[in-house]
Image (cartoon, rainbow, N blue to C red; front, side, top):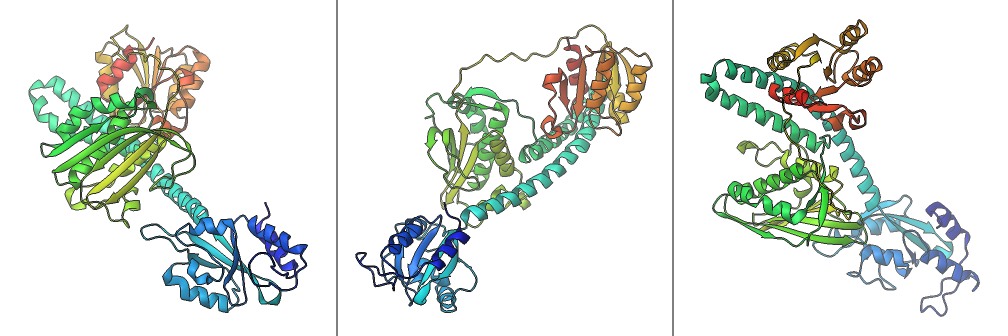
Length: 516
Protein backbone atom coordinates (compact mmCIF):
# COMPACT_ATOMS: atom_id res chain seq x y z
CA UNK A 1 0.00 0.00 0.00
CA UNK A 2 1.40 3.40 -1.02
CA UNK A 3 1.95 5.86 1.84
CA UNK A 4 0.48 9.36 1.69
CA UNK A 5 3.65 11.40 0.94
CA UNK A 6 4.56 9.08 -1.94
CA UNK A 7 1.01 9.19 -3.23
CA UNK A 8 0.92 13.00 -3.20
CA UNK A 9 4.18 13.09 -5.16
CA UNK A 10 2.79 10.59 -7.65
CA UNK A 11 -0.36 12.62 -8.17
CA UNK A 12 1.64 15.79 -8.77
CA UNK A 13 3.81 14.03 -11.32
CA UNK A 14 0.88 13.01 -13.49
CA UNK A 15 -0.55 15.25 -16.18
CA UNK A 16 -4.20 15.66 -16.91
CA UNK A 17 -6.31 13.44 -19.07
CA UNK A 18 -9.77 13.32 -20.51
CA UNK A 19 -12.46 11.47 -18.59
CA UNK A 20 -14.31 9.99 -21.58
CA UNK A 21 -16.44 7.02 -20.79
CA UNK A 22 -16.67 7.89 -17.09
CA UNK A 23 -19.59 10.28 -17.35
CA UNK A 24 -17.42 13.10 -15.94
CA UNK A 25 -16.30 16.42 -17.37
CA UNK A 26 -13.09 16.49 -19.35
CA UNK A 27 -10.12 16.62 -17.01
CA UNK A 28 -7.52 18.14 -19.28
CA UNK A 29 -4.92 16.57 -21.52
CA UNK A 30 -3.83 13.31 -19.91
CA UNK A 31 -3.15 10.45 -22.23
CA UNK A 32 -5.68 7.64 -22.16
CA UNK A 33 -2.86 5.33 -20.95
CA UNK A 34 -2.32 7.43 -17.81
CA UNK A 35 -6.00 7.90 -16.98
CA UNK A 36 -6.60 4.33 -15.61
CA UNK A 37 -3.46 4.63 -13.47
CA UNK A 38 -4.75 7.81 -11.86
CA UNK A 39 -8.11 6.20 -11.12
CA UNK A 40 -6.39 3.12 -9.70
CA UNK A 41 -4.29 5.34 -7.45
CA UNK A 42 -7.43 7.06 -6.21
CA UNK A 43 -9.27 3.81 -5.48
CA UNK A 44 -6.20 2.27 -3.83
CA UNK A 45 -5.66 5.09 -1.37
CA UNK A 46 -5.19 4.02 2.29
CA UNK A 47 -7.54 6.87 3.19
CA UNK A 48 -10.52 8.70 1.78
CA UNK A 49 -9.88 10.58 -1.46
CA UNK A 50 -11.56 12.62 -4.16
CA UNK A 51 -10.70 14.47 -7.36
CA UNK A 52 -11.93 18.07 -7.39
CA UNK A 53 -12.70 20.44 -10.21
CA UNK A 54 -11.51 24.05 -10.38
CA UNK A 55 -14.67 25.12 -8.53
CA UNK A 56 -13.98 22.75 -5.64
CA UNK A 57 -16.78 20.32 -6.56
CA UNK A 58 -16.37 16.56 -6.40
CA UNK A 59 -15.55 14.87 -9.71
CA UNK A 60 -14.86 11.38 -8.37
CA UNK A 61 -14.60 9.81 -4.89
CA UNK A 62 -12.99 6.58 -3.80
CA UNK A 63 -14.47 3.77 -1.64
CA UNK A 64 -12.50 4.96 1.39
CA UNK A 65 -14.28 8.31 1.45
CA UNK A 66 -17.68 6.67 0.99
CA UNK A 67 -16.97 4.45 3.99
CA UNK A 68 -15.89 7.42 6.13
CA UNK A 69 -19.04 9.48 5.56
CA UNK A 70 -21.33 6.46 5.52
CA UNK A 71 -24.57 5.83 3.63
CA UNK A 72 -26.35 8.80 5.19
CA UNK A 73 -24.54 11.17 2.79
CA UNK A 74 -24.70 9.95 -0.83
CA UNK A 75 -21.59 11.21 -2.64
CA UNK A 76 -22.29 12.33 -6.18
CA UNK A 77 -20.53 14.33 -8.85
CA UNK A 78 -20.89 18.07 -8.32
CA UNK A 79 -21.26 17.91 -4.52
CA UNK A 80 -19.27 20.69 -2.78
CA UNK A 81 -16.45 19.61 -0.44
CA UNK A 82 -18.06 21.59 2.39
CA UNK A 83 -20.98 19.10 2.35
CA UNK A 84 -18.60 16.44 3.70
CA UNK A 85 -18.22 18.17 7.07
CA UNK A 86 -20.42 19.23 9.98
CA UNK A 87 -22.57 22.34 9.28
CA UNK A 88 -20.64 24.46 11.78
CA UNK A 89 -17.36 23.85 9.91
CA UNK A 90 -18.52 24.42 6.33
CA UNK A 91 -17.52 28.09 6.12
CA UNK A 92 -14.05 27.24 7.42
CA UNK A 93 -13.68 24.51 4.80
CA UNK A 94 -14.80 26.89 2.04
CA UNK A 95 -12.22 29.47 3.15
CA UNK A 96 -9.55 26.76 3.34
CA UNK A 97 -10.31 25.66 -0.21
CA UNK A 98 -10.29 29.26 -1.43
CA UNK A 99 -6.84 29.77 0.07
CA UNK A 100 -5.50 26.69 -1.70
CA UNK A 101 -5.23 24.57 1.46
CA UNK A 102 -1.64 25.50 2.31
CA UNK A 103 -1.75 23.43 5.52
CA UNK A 104 -3.85 20.38 6.43
CA UNK A 105 -7.17 21.09 8.15
CA UNK A 106 -8.82 19.05 10.91
CA UNK A 107 -12.59 18.79 10.49
CA UNK A 108 -15.46 16.69 11.80
CA UNK A 109 -17.16 14.81 8.98
CA UNK A 110 -20.92 14.89 8.50
CA UNK A 111 -22.77 12.24 10.52
CA UNK A 112 -26.41 11.31 11.12
CA UNK A 113 -28.09 12.85 14.17
CA UNK A 114 -27.24 10.93 17.34
CA UNK A 115 -23.95 9.55 16.01
CA UNK A 116 -20.52 10.86 16.89
CA UNK A 117 -18.81 12.46 13.86
CA UNK A 118 -15.49 11.16 12.58
CA UNK A 119 -12.59 13.54 13.07
CA UNK A 120 -10.54 13.73 9.86
CA UNK A 121 -7.50 15.53 8.46
CA UNK A 122 -8.07 17.17 5.06
CA UNK A 123 -5.18 17.71 2.64
CA UNK A 124 -5.11 19.25 -0.84
CA UNK A 125 -2.75 18.04 -3.55
CA UNK A 126 -2.47 20.48 -6.52
CA UNK A 127 -2.77 18.96 -9.99
CA UNK A 128 -2.23 20.58 -13.41
CA UNK A 129 -4.76 22.98 -14.94
CA UNK A 130 -6.24 24.00 -11.58
CA UNK A 131 -7.47 20.56 -10.60
CA UNK A 132 -6.83 19.19 -7.11
CA UNK A 133 -6.95 15.94 -5.19
CA UNK A 134 -8.51 15.87 -1.72
CA UNK A 135 -7.07 13.38 0.77
CA UNK A 136 -9.18 12.63 3.90
CA UNK A 137 -7.38 10.78 6.70
CA UNK A 138 -9.40 9.28 9.56
CA UNK A 139 -7.95 10.55 12.86
CA UNK A 140 -10.13 8.35 15.08
CA UNK A 141 -7.48 5.68 15.57
CA UNK A 142 -4.75 8.24 16.23
CA UNK A 143 -7.00 10.06 18.71
CA UNK A 144 -7.90 6.79 20.40
CA UNK A 145 -4.26 5.80 20.76
CA UNK A 146 -3.41 9.20 22.24
CA UNK A 147 -6.33 9.03 24.69
CA UNK A 148 -5.40 5.47 25.68
CA UNK A 149 -1.80 6.54 26.25
CA UNK A 150 -2.93 9.47 28.40
CA UNK A 151 -5.32 7.23 30.34
CA UNK A 152 -2.57 4.66 30.80
CA UNK A 153 -0.26 7.34 32.17
CA UNK A 154 -2.92 8.46 34.63
CA UNK A 155 -3.54 4.85 35.58
CA UNK A 156 0.14 4.25 36.26
CA UNK A 157 0.35 7.38 38.39
CA UNK A 158 -2.70 6.44 40.45
CA UNK A 159 -1.44 2.86 40.62
CA UNK A 160 1.82 4.01 42.18
CA UNK A 161 -0.13 6.18 44.61
CA UNK A 162 -2.47 3.29 45.44
CA UNK A 163 0.47 0.96 46.01
CA UNK A 164 2.11 3.37 48.44
CA UNK A 165 -1.15 3.94 50.27
CA UNK A 166 -1.78 0.20 50.44
CA UNK A 167 1.60 -0.52 52.01
CA UNK A 168 1.42 2.14 54.70
CA UNK A 169 -2.29 1.92 55.51
CA UNK A 170 -2.34 -1.87 55.59
CA UNK A 171 0.54 -1.86 58.08
CA UNK A 172 -1.43 0.51 60.30
CA UNK A 173 -4.62 -1.51 59.97
CA UNK A 174 -2.77 -4.72 60.87
CA UNK A 175 -1.52 -3.06 64.07
CA UNK A 176 -5.02 -1.79 64.91
CA UNK A 177 -6.69 -5.17 64.30
CA UNK A 178 -4.00 -7.03 66.21
CA UNK A 179 -4.16 -4.70 69.19
CA UNK A 180 -7.94 -5.00 69.38
CA UNK A 181 -7.75 -8.80 69.23
CA UNK A 182 -5.28 -8.82 72.10
CA UNK A 183 -7.43 -6.40 74.11
CA UNK A 184 -10.48 -8.59 73.58
CA UNK A 185 -8.56 -11.69 74.72
CA UNK A 186 -7.40 -10.00 77.91
CA UNK A 187 -10.71 -8.29 78.67
CA UNK A 188 -13.58 -10.18 76.99
CA UNK A 189 -16.11 -7.74 78.46
CA UNK A 190 -14.94 -5.01 76.02
CA UNK A 191 -15.33 -7.17 72.90
CA UNK A 192 -18.66 -5.62 71.99
CA UNK A 193 -17.33 -2.11 72.51
CA UNK A 194 -14.38 -2.85 70.20
CA UNK A 195 -16.59 -4.11 67.39
CA UNK A 196 -17.23 -0.66 65.77
CA UNK A 197 -13.46 -0.09 65.60
CA UNK A 198 -12.97 -3.53 64.03
CA UNK A 199 -15.67 -2.76 61.48
CA UNK A 200 -14.02 0.57 60.66
CA UNK A 201 -10.65 -1.13 60.16
CA UNK A 202 -12.27 -3.69 57.87
CA UNK A 203 -13.86 -0.90 55.85
CA UNK A 204 -10.47 0.76 55.54
CA UNK A 205 -8.95 -2.48 54.27
CA UNK A 206 -11.79 -2.82 51.74
CA UNK A 207 -11.17 0.75 50.51
CA UNK A 208 -7.49 -0.06 49.92
CA UNK A 209 -8.49 -3.20 47.99
CA UNK A 210 -10.78 -1.07 45.83
CA UNK A 211 -7.91 1.31 45.09
CA UNK A 212 -5.73 -1.61 44.05
CA UNK A 213 -8.50 -3.13 41.96
CA UNK A 214 -9.01 0.17 40.16
CA UNK A 215 -5.29 0.39 39.46
CA UNK A 216 -5.34 -3.25 38.25
CA UNK A 217 -2.74 -4.09 40.85
CA UNK A 218 -4.88 -6.47 42.90
CA UNK A 219 -3.89 -10.12 42.98
CA UNK A 220 -6.63 -12.14 41.27
CA UNK A 221 -7.39 -15.77 42.06
CA UNK A 222 -9.25 -16.90 38.93
CA UNK A 223 -11.32 -20.06 38.75
CA UNK A 224 -13.50 -21.53 36.02
CA UNK A 225 -17.14 -20.75 36.85
CA UNK A 226 -20.54 -21.04 35.20
CA UNK A 227 -21.72 -17.47 34.62
CA UNK A 228 -25.45 -18.18 35.06
CA UNK A 229 -24.89 -20.13 38.28
CA UNK A 230 -22.68 -17.41 39.75
CA UNK A 231 -25.22 -14.65 39.08
CA UNK A 232 -28.10 -16.74 40.45
CA UNK A 233 -26.15 -17.52 43.62
CA UNK A 234 -25.75 -13.79 44.31
CA UNK A 235 -29.45 -12.99 43.85
CA UNK A 236 -30.38 -13.25 47.54
CA UNK A 237 -27.68 -10.77 48.57
CA UNK A 238 -28.62 -8.41 45.73
CA UNK A 239 -32.30 -8.38 46.71
CA UNK A 240 -31.34 -7.52 50.28
CA UNK A 241 -29.03 -4.74 49.03
CA UNK A 242 -31.60 -3.20 46.67
CA UNK A 243 -34.44 -2.95 49.18
CA UNK A 244 -38.16 -3.69 48.88
CA UNK A 245 -39.08 -1.09 46.25
CA UNK A 246 -36.57 -2.14 43.59
CA UNK A 247 -37.52 -5.22 41.58
CA UNK A 248 -34.65 -7.53 40.64
CA UNK A 249 -35.10 -9.46 37.41
CA UNK A 250 -32.64 -12.16 36.30
CA UNK A 251 -32.55 -13.27 32.66
CA UNK A 252 -30.05 -16.12 32.39
CA UNK A 253 -29.15 -16.71 28.76
CA UNK A 254 -25.47 -17.68 28.73
CA UNK A 255 -26.48 -21.33 28.21
CA UNK A 256 -23.84 -22.77 30.48
CA UNK A 257 -21.05 -20.54 29.19
CA UNK A 258 -18.03 -20.62 31.46
CA UNK A 259 -15.50 -17.91 32.22
CA UNK A 260 -12.24 -17.95 34.12
CA UNK A 261 -12.36 -15.10 36.61
CA UNK A 262 -11.88 -14.40 40.28
CA UNK A 263 -15.39 -15.14 41.64
CA UNK A 264 -14.95 -12.80 44.60
CA UNK A 265 -14.02 -9.94 42.27
CA UNK A 266 -16.94 -10.76 39.94
CA UNK A 267 -19.28 -10.56 42.95
CA UNK A 268 -17.68 -7.20 43.77
CA UNK A 269 -18.43 -5.98 40.24
CA UNK A 270 -22.10 -6.93 40.52
CA UNK A 271 -22.46 -5.47 44.00
CA UNK A 272 -20.86 -2.18 42.93
CA UNK A 273 -23.11 -1.87 39.88
CA UNK A 274 -26.20 -2.78 41.91
CA UNK A 275 -25.34 -0.21 44.58
CA UNK A 276 -24.87 2.51 41.96
CA UNK A 277 -28.17 1.57 40.33
CA UNK A 278 -30.01 1.62 43.68
CA UNK A 279 -28.70 5.10 44.42
CA UNK A 280 -29.50 6.34 40.91
CA UNK A 281 -33.08 5.05 41.14
CA UNK A 282 -33.54 6.64 44.59
CA UNK A 283 -34.59 3.28 45.97
CA UNK A 284 -37.42 2.58 43.51
CA UNK A 285 -37.37 0.97 40.06
CA UNK A 286 -36.19 -2.17 38.32
CA UNK A 287 -32.74 -3.73 38.03
CA UNK A 288 -32.30 -6.34 35.32
CA UNK A 289 -29.28 -8.63 35.10
CA UNK A 290 -28.89 -10.45 31.79
CA UNK A 291 -26.36 -13.10 30.80
CA UNK A 292 -25.71 -13.95 27.16
CA UNK A 293 -23.00 -14.93 24.71
CA UNK A 294 -21.68 -13.00 21.74
CA UNK A 295 -19.20 -13.25 18.90
CA UNK A 296 -17.44 -10.08 17.70
CA UNK A 297 -16.09 -10.42 14.17
CA UNK A 298 -14.38 -7.02 14.26
CA UNK A 299 -13.66 -4.27 16.75
CA UNK A 300 -16.86 -2.77 18.15
CA UNK A 301 -16.67 0.81 19.49
CA UNK A 302 -17.99 1.66 22.92
CA UNK A 303 -17.48 3.69 26.10
CA UNK A 304 -15.09 3.27 27.84
CA UNK A 305 -13.73 0.20 25.99
CA UNK A 306 -13.53 -0.95 22.42
CA UNK A 307 -14.56 -4.61 22.19
CA UNK A 308 -11.88 -6.67 20.39
CA UNK A 309 -12.87 -9.51 18.04
CA UNK A 310 -13.49 -12.78 19.84
CA UNK A 311 -15.95 -15.10 21.54
CA UNK A 312 -17.43 -13.60 24.67
CA UNK A 313 -19.68 -14.37 27.61
CA UNK A 314 -21.79 -11.31 28.35
CA UNK A 315 -23.10 -9.89 31.62
CA UNK A 316 -25.47 -6.91 31.46
CA UNK A 317 -26.74 -4.79 34.34
CA UNK A 318 -29.62 -2.49 33.37
CA UNK A 319 -31.47 -0.03 35.61
CA UNK A 320 -34.44 2.28 35.14
CA UNK A 321 -32.82 5.34 36.70
CA UNK A 322 -32.84 8.84 35.25
CA UNK A 323 -29.85 8.13 32.99
CA UNK A 324 -26.40 9.67 32.66
CA UNK A 325 -25.85 12.77 30.49
CA UNK A 326 -23.89 11.97 27.33
CA UNK A 327 -21.10 14.42 28.16
CA UNK A 328 -20.65 12.81 31.58
CA UNK A 329 -20.74 9.16 30.50
CA UNK A 330 -17.00 8.84 29.63
CA UNK A 331 -16.01 10.50 32.92
CA UNK A 332 -17.86 8.18 35.30
CA UNK A 333 -15.00 5.66 35.04
CA UNK A 334 -12.37 8.18 36.10
CA UNK A 335 -10.95 7.69 39.60
CA UNK A 336 -12.47 9.97 42.24
CA UNK A 337 -15.05 11.40 39.83
CA UNK A 338 -18.41 11.33 41.60
CA UNK A 339 -21.75 13.08 41.40
CA UNK A 340 -22.56 11.94 44.96
CA UNK A 341 -19.86 13.78 46.88
CA UNK A 342 -22.31 15.25 49.44
CA UNK A 343 -23.70 11.74 50.04
CA UNK A 344 -20.25 10.30 50.70
CA UNK A 345 -19.42 8.97 47.25
CA UNK A 346 -15.71 8.22 46.74
CA UNK A 347 -15.69 8.04 42.94
CA UNK A 348 -14.03 4.60 43.04
CA UNK A 349 -17.01 2.30 42.44
CA UNK A 350 -17.10 2.32 38.64
CA UNK A 351 -13.34 2.82 38.38
CA UNK A 352 -12.98 -0.36 40.45
CA UNK A 353 -15.45 -2.22 38.23
CA UNK A 354 -13.54 -1.14 35.12
CA UNK A 355 -10.21 -2.16 36.64
CA UNK A 356 -11.46 -5.63 37.60
CA UNK A 357 -13.02 -6.23 34.17
CA UNK A 358 -9.89 -5.16 32.29
CA UNK A 359 -7.57 -7.11 34.61
CA UNK A 360 -9.76 -10.17 33.94
CA UNK A 361 -9.17 -9.81 30.18
CA UNK A 362 -12.62 -8.39 29.48
CA UNK A 363 -14.15 -5.19 28.15
CA UNK A 364 -16.76 -2.86 29.66
CA UNK A 365 -19.20 -0.77 27.67
CA UNK A 366 -21.87 1.60 28.97
CA UNK A 367 -24.79 3.35 27.36
CA UNK A 368 -27.48 5.56 28.84
CA UNK A 369 -30.55 7.58 28.02
CA UNK A 370 -33.36 8.96 30.19
CA UNK A 371 -34.97 6.03 31.97
CA UNK A 372 -32.25 3.47 31.16
CA UNK A 373 -28.59 2.87 31.91
CA UNK A 374 -26.86 -0.32 30.74
CA UNK A 375 -23.44 -1.66 31.71
CA UNK A 376 -22.37 -4.48 29.40
CA UNK A 377 -19.44 -6.63 30.52
CA UNK A 378 -17.72 -8.95 28.06
CA UNK A 379 -15.57 -11.73 29.53
CA UNK A 380 -13.51 -14.18 27.44
CA UNK A 381 -15.27 -17.52 27.12
CA UNK A 382 -13.50 -20.47 28.66
CA UNK A 383 -13.59 -23.36 26.21
CA UNK A 384 -11.51 -25.89 28.21
CA UNK A 385 -12.63 -28.61 30.56
CA UNK A 386 -13.77 -27.93 34.10
CA UNK A 387 -11.14 -28.84 36.68
CA UNK A 388 -11.79 -29.67 40.28
CA UNK A 389 -10.73 -26.93 42.68
CA UNK A 390 -8.78 -27.88 45.76
CA UNK A 391 -10.84 -27.16 48.87
CA UNK A 392 -9.37 -24.45 51.04
CA UNK A 393 -9.47 -25.31 54.75
CA UNK A 394 -8.05 -23.45 57.72
CA UNK A 395 -4.76 -24.85 58.82
CA UNK A 396 -4.91 -26.98 61.90
CA UNK A 397 -2.46 -26.17 64.66
CA UNK A 398 0.66 -28.17 63.95
CA UNK A 399 3.89 -28.77 65.79
CA UNK A 400 5.67 -25.89 67.46
CA UNK A 401 8.21 -24.17 65.22
CA UNK A 402 11.07 -21.79 65.60
CA UNK A 403 9.93 -18.71 63.67
CA UNK A 404 12.32 -16.05 62.42
CA UNK A 405 10.02 -13.01 62.26
CA UNK A 406 11.26 -10.04 60.21
CA UNK A 407 9.39 -6.72 59.93
CA UNK A 408 10.61 -3.12 60.09
CA UNK A 409 7.26 -2.03 61.60
CA UNK A 410 8.07 -2.62 65.29
CA UNK A 411 4.50 -2.52 66.75
CA UNK A 412 3.25 -4.97 64.15
CA UNK A 413 6.24 -7.25 64.66
CA UNK A 414 5.61 -7.36 68.42
CA UNK A 415 1.91 -8.15 67.97
CA UNK A 416 2.71 -10.95 65.53
CA UNK A 417 5.36 -12.36 67.87
CA UNK A 418 2.93 -12.43 70.80
CA UNK A 419 0.30 -14.27 68.74
CA UNK A 420 2.81 -16.85 67.49
CA UNK A 421 4.22 -17.44 70.97
CA UNK A 422 0.74 -17.90 72.42
CA UNK A 423 0.16 -20.57 69.78
CA UNK A 424 3.23 -22.43 71.08
CA UNK A 425 5.85 -21.27 68.56
CA UNK A 426 9.27 -19.91 69.51
CA UNK A 427 9.99 -16.54 67.89
CA UNK A 428 13.22 -14.73 67.06
CA UNK A 429 12.65 -11.16 65.88
CA UNK A 430 14.70 -9.10 63.39
CA UNK A 431 14.03 -5.52 62.32
CA UNK A 432 15.21 -5.85 58.70
CA UNK A 433 16.50 -8.30 56.13
CA UNK A 434 20.18 -7.63 56.72
CA UNK A 435 19.86 -8.33 60.45
CA UNK A 436 17.93 -11.52 59.78
CA UNK A 437 20.54 -12.80 57.32
CA UNK A 438 23.31 -12.09 59.84
CA UNK A 439 21.47 -14.28 62.37
CA UNK A 440 21.20 -17.13 59.87
CA UNK A 441 24.83 -16.82 58.80
CA UNK A 442 25.75 -16.77 62.50
CA UNK A 443 24.21 -20.21 63.00
CA UNK A 444 20.50 -19.58 63.67
CA UNK A 445 18.42 -22.44 62.23
CA UNK A 446 14.77 -21.32 62.08
CA UNK A 447 11.99 -23.73 61.22
CA UNK A 448 10.17 -21.07 59.19
CA UNK A 449 10.94 -17.58 57.91
CA UNK A 450 8.12 -15.02 58.21
CA UNK A 451 9.09 -11.69 56.66
CA UNK A 452 7.66 -8.45 55.38
CA UNK A 453 8.61 -7.81 51.75
CA UNK A 454 9.14 -4.05 51.64
CA UNK A 455 11.89 -3.10 54.09
CA UNK A 456 14.90 -0.79 54.06
CA UNK A 457 17.98 -2.51 52.63
CA UNK A 458 17.45 -6.17 51.75
CA UNK A 459 13.79 -6.86 50.95
CA UNK A 460 11.89 -9.97 51.93
CA UNK A 461 12.22 -11.74 48.58
CA UNK A 462 16.01 -11.32 48.53
CA UNK A 463 16.15 -12.47 52.16
CA UNK A 464 14.15 -15.61 51.40
CA UNK A 465 16.47 -16.56 48.53
CA UNK A 466 19.59 -15.85 50.56
CA UNK A 467 18.25 -17.85 53.52
CA UNK A 468 17.56 -20.81 51.26
CA UNK A 469 21.19 -20.82 50.19
CA UNK A 470 21.83 -22.00 53.78
CA UNK A 471 18.62 -24.03 54.22
CA UNK A 472 17.17 -25.02 50.81
CA UNK A 473 13.93 -26.49 52.23
CA UNK A 474 13.17 -23.58 54.59
CA UNK A 475 9.41 -22.76 54.59
CA UNK A 476 8.81 -19.08 53.89
CA UNK A 477 5.84 -16.77 54.48
CA UNK A 478 6.14 -13.31 52.93
CA UNK A 479 3.80 -10.48 53.92
CA UNK A 480 3.12 -7.13 52.31
CA UNK A 481 0.77 -4.20 52.36
CA UNK A 482 1.10 -4.21 48.57
CA UNK A 483 -0.90 -6.70 46.56
CA UNK A 484 1.28 -9.47 45.14
CA UNK A 485 0.44 -8.31 41.62
CA UNK A 486 1.77 -4.84 42.45
CA UNK A 487 5.11 -6.32 43.50
CA UNK A 488 5.68 -7.61 39.94
CA UNK A 489 7.07 -10.89 41.27
CA UNK A 490 5.80 -14.45 41.18
CA UNK A 491 6.09 -16.35 44.44
CA UNK A 492 4.27 -19.53 43.45
CA UNK A 493 7.22 -21.03 41.58
CA UNK A 494 9.42 -20.52 44.64
CA UNK A 495 7.04 -22.35 46.97
CA UNK A 496 6.55 -19.21 49.05
CA UNK A 497 3.28 -18.44 50.84
CA UNK A 498 2.02 -14.88 50.45
CA UNK A 499 -0.01 -13.25 53.25
CA UNK A 500 -1.48 -9.85 52.34
CA UNK A 501 -1.77 -7.10 54.90
CA UNK A 502 -3.78 -6.16 56.82
CA UNK A 503 -3.95 -9.50 58.58
CA UNK A 504 -5.15 -10.44 62.01
CA UNK A 505 -2.63 -12.24 64.24
CA UNK A 506 -4.80 -15.36 64.20
CA UNK A 507 -4.54 -15.51 60.41
CA UNK A 508 -0.75 -15.49 60.62
CA UNK A 509 -0.86 -18.30 63.19
CA UNK A 510 -3.11 -20.36 60.87
CA UNK A 511 -0.76 -19.84 57.92
CA UNK A 512 2.33 -20.85 59.90
CA UNK A 513 0.57 -23.86 61.41
CA UNK A 514 -0.58 -25.06 57.98
CA UNK A 515 2.93 -25.08 56.48
CA UNK A 516 4.24 -28.54 55.54
